[in-house]
Image (cartoon, rainbow, N blue to C red):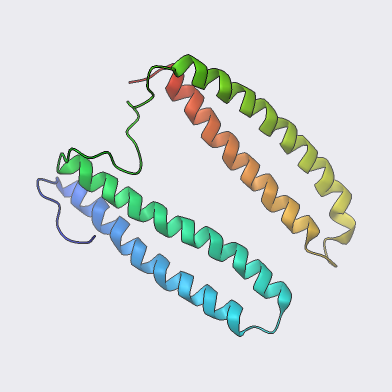
Length: 159
């Protein structure tokens, strides 16, 4: 993936270098987490490290996709990158907006439920991982809402 971009501006070249070097750093970090988890005698640490490994694998893939999307745009390649351009909403934008608004409502209900559950689990936050797991789910729900609000905004008002 590394190498120079044909026709890139200085900014694009620097961004590409940053993305591709981050892929290498993520690879090393992923290996470190995997080794730490496999060598640990703690089931708790192995479980939590495995959650981080899942995120790091996704981050690694996303950085590769970002770098390739940049290469595709800079070099004006005809193929569609894994990370689509924002002009590709298709002809059913109104349906996408409607679906998105329904999903936002569901995620907001989920966030409320998780918040109540997190409060219930505070008493055991120092003796179990349960409170932490619910907090992580709350963070995922916040991420889902961020994605859905982005979709709604850009599907309603395309480029």
